[in-house]
Image 1: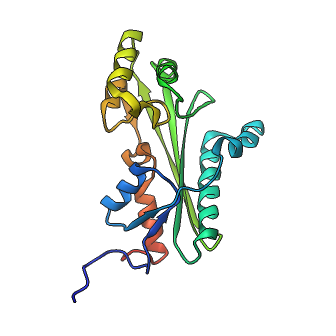
Image 2: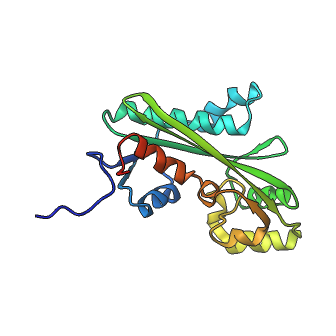
Length: 208
């Protein structure tokens, strides 16, 4: 039986230490076979001491990506494990996924008319050791928004506003919120994909 052509060289699929359908979808669209396993990590508890120390959003994303990758790589020996995380910062304040529709509307109202940063980090690990890590930052400027518009947006977007930090998904209705964007599209979606692909090539997991 003829083997199907593939760019993937590793014996088993990449193991994504996340339950993110968006990240898994990006990887699969790029030709990477992916399994997912969401690590049992309390991200807010892991983040708390870093915030107390004044660690910035970019470093927090890197630390959480590392914790996820190492946690899963110990559970699944021999596998290439990818951990990823994204933080949103605006003028020194860190934002998280809103807990409800009112929280989403409040986040958007706070970000309206201002520029914020999305920091997306990744760590590739195997057998409890870090093989590589990286990250990228994108800058996004929201339009000035009336409260009536925000309320209508949240109602139309529905539960999707609760799945992303900042209360928006740029690939959908969230594009209506923005005046300007600087940075890589994949980074905005939560994974600096081009850097991840290059890392996998360097590790021999992908055909170069």
